[in-house]
Image 1 (tube, rainbow, N blue to C red):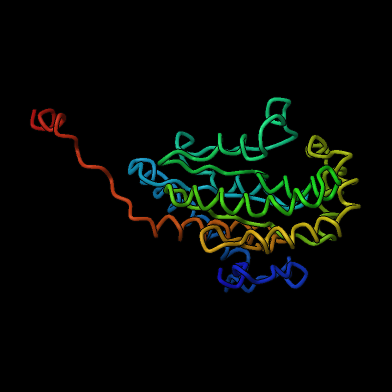
Image 2 (image 1 turned 90 degrees about the vertical axis):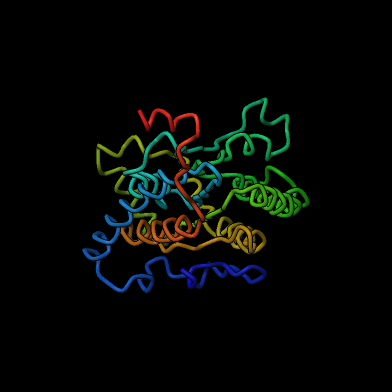
Length: 267
């Protein structure tokens, strides 16, 4: 995963990252899927331990262009976990109430509690991406927000939340194929929106916005990973590997039996 990590203080260089790269796994698709099955089982075990230990929290941020696979990643990677300790939060157009507060107000309400894993399907980064590309806020505002995001994430980290931020990187050609598939397959018509095509026309502007956002907000406490996502199985595998590696690095223990319940054990 070191090859996919955006080093703090260094340019993200999205244009040099190959969306079809497979060097992160020494094997073919079948071997990758078998490895993914094992990781799914391991993640289930670690998620239960995290919830039982109730000392730390994990916040996973998924960003990417339309059809990059945010929903698919969540569905595949977290297929075996207990829903009681995992939540998905998605951030769309702010409500009137949300618009009357600072842009991080609604985000803070969705961060994980101790023992939880929360996945942001899109996130606070939309406020330096889509708002920038569509000219909804002035340059001085989105430039200031990089610092505010870093400070926000650092505060959460110091309070016990670990960040994993994944940019699901697909090629423009692969996006076209996936969008066309949504039009051709009746079971996927519901996924297609006219805005997908409109946003696609803004690809260069989005790449520029992502480049700066990842460069300015990949920190030692909350780094970004650029995940090659043209191959769905490899995307899911790389994300799973990093989540499991991170959870295995936590010092987690099942809590001992409380004193008041020891008598029940004796009985």
